[in-house]
Amino acid sequence: MIYPKLISKFFLLLLTISFSLSSAFAQQLPGQMEVKEDFSEEELKEFVRVNVALIPVQENAQEKMVEAIQSSGLTIDRFQQLAQAQQAGNLRDAAETPEEVAQFNDAGQKVMATQENMQEEIQKVISDSKLSEQEFQQIYVAYTQSAKVKEKVDEMMDKEFNP
Image (cartoon, rainbow, N blue to C red):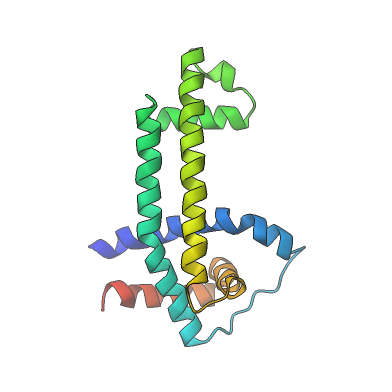
């Protein structure tokens, strides 16, 4: 069944969007924000439509990131291990050779460029939608924090992929 695969991509996409919007949230949401739940049917349909439109954007970016990592000579697993080591501040200790550090840095720059391009595409799709960026963010926050909104959006996604 294709639906579970698409839903898992939807959740992955929401995670991706959360990273791209996190700085905007940090600037706009000081402290705890009350979650709005009373969205119109049209607003939720547009939110689903936007997310469906973003699936190929995310898939394309994911393919490019995998290609960038592999073309640098690293496996995905090794890149992730080195990324974790870098975050912990011990990349040089985790890398087997200086060449591996160079491979990681090369792949990392390509991945970051791909992520920046993807974020621009995400912003364009949202901007071209019937939702303002703020409305999209409100629905996104509600989707992640409100069981009621999540259930409604998931139901709409199910209807989208299984008419």
